Image (tube, rainbow, N blue to C red; front, side, top):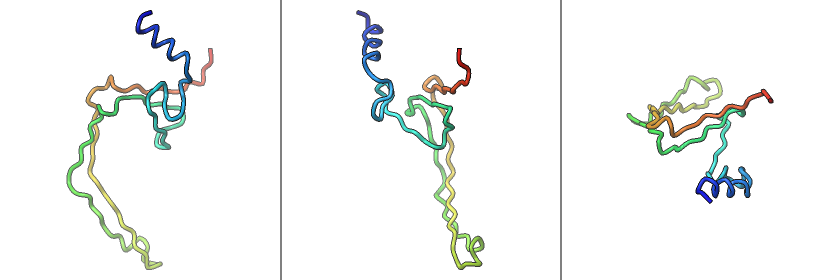
Length: 97
């Protein structure tokens, strides 16, 4: 039996979604992604750069009438993907064949 056949047999013998894994890979859900999208990837290929400092600024005008204080926080970041082939974006289709 080839490796591919062994893998296929192992996949057939288990649920694709079991516990907190999908086909053996840990997954995370988020309300930041629409319900009809699935992003699968190697997130070690995601580069996140941060520069500057964390800015915390008091905004006394926003809640001045009630005597409250709003604190506004800003951080400069950017992201890039090192290897685009490390990610797959799946979209749900309403079409049924």
